[in-house]
Length: 64
Image 1: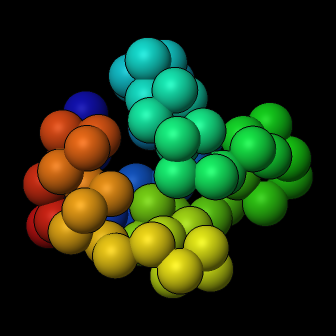
Image 2: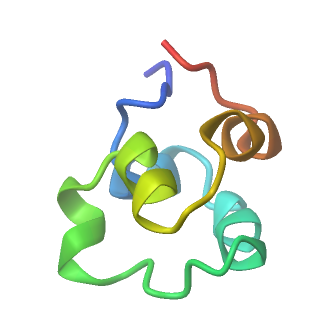
């Protein structure tokens, strides 16, 4: 599966478990919460005030 900004946090963590450390660095500590199952990477960046491009680059994920 190709990960993009529209992938959910849960999908990201299933495909790239090492991404948890990157998300923690951005201050996203609730990776196992119910919201993570349906929240996209784009939505998470917006909700946490993180520039999307910066997060995607750190995660090694394409925007689209």
